[in-house]
Amino acid sequence: MQKSSKIILGIDPGTLLMGYGIIVASGRDVKVLEMDRLKMNGRQDSYTRLQLIHQKITELIIRFKPQHFAIEAPFFGKNVQSMLKLGRAQGVAIAAAMQAGLEVHEYSPKKVKQSITGNGNADKEQVWKMLQQLLSLNGTPIGSFDISDALAVAVCHHFQDNPFLKNSGKVLKGWEDFVAKNPGRVR
Image 1 (cartoon, helix red, strand yellow):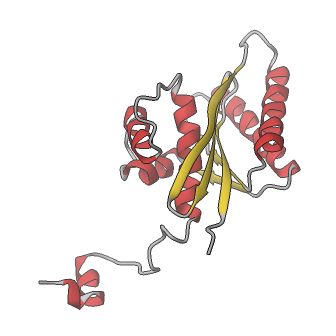
Image 2 (tube, rainbow, N blue to C red; image 1 turned 90 degrees about the horizontal axis):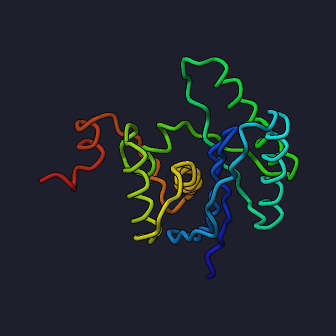
Image 3 (cartoon, rainbow, N blue to C red; image 1 turned 180 degrees about the horizontal axis):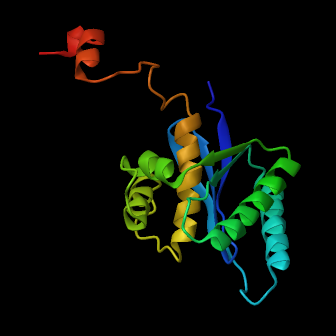
């Protein structure tokens, strides 16, 4: 039986730098198709930058034909203006995906870090190091953490959406629960 593969487009939204990562996943095998960033000129008006984001997402969707679209949710900061700008960038990226008929999956930064490293408080360097291991990218330079963040969002979605990697449906509430549900595994 042939494993079905899926292409996932991951986005780290931003109004000056938007990272993107495209992976193809088949079962437990994951390969990077492309990872890069869209760098925009801060002197351009915000609407021109939003148009560039929409154009880039649309171009990536046409070129790679992803079945899944994953985007990092904005984290809540203290600067309201920054949050507003980030929300607009995210909204435009989501609109481009929806226009192409893709279902949108949104993950918090903490969820992405937890999924990749096992630690929701991992720093960007730790996330990149783990991605290098997971995707056989050892020695591959990363020009910007916006790129690795986008790649991490795509891999996070793969982990969340992959029936081969999901647990067997058992939800455990501590060691006592584990022992009760797995008596043969206790020595």
